[in-house]
Amino acid sequence: MNTTDWNTSVYGQAALEDRCAPRQRVNIPASLRPSGGRGFQTVVLDLSLGGFCANALQKMYPGNRCWLTIPGMEALQAEVVWWDAGRVGCAFANLLSPIVHDNILARYRGDGVFRRV
Image (cartoon, rainbow, N blue to C red; front, side):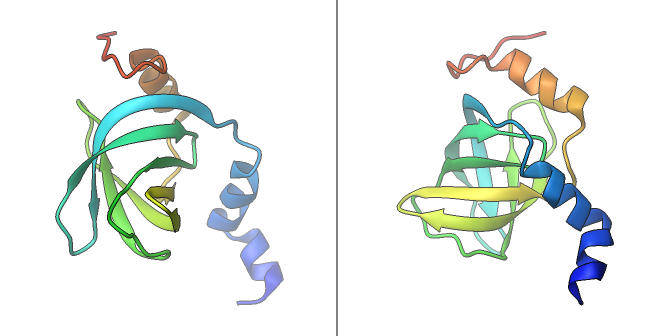
């Protein structure tokens, strides 16, 4: 795929836009399941429309799929972008809807305490 094709693809455009998406610092207890592996408990440390950063003591490999489950929500498919010393950065397979993103932020105001909306 040449650069022009990548820049005009839907994912390419979303990835470029995501670089500008604000990352919200959060503290959300969740579970993360790597493809072909067992799920484990984690804490999501930041969240944007395009992805998240979370604790991951087990090594995760860039390019692999994973699923993030936040309490009360269906699992969100993502791709590992990086892993470094117990933290993982992932890009969602589909951008979060701004409404879903805002609802998550309303439920978890950075202190890890669940609030029903």
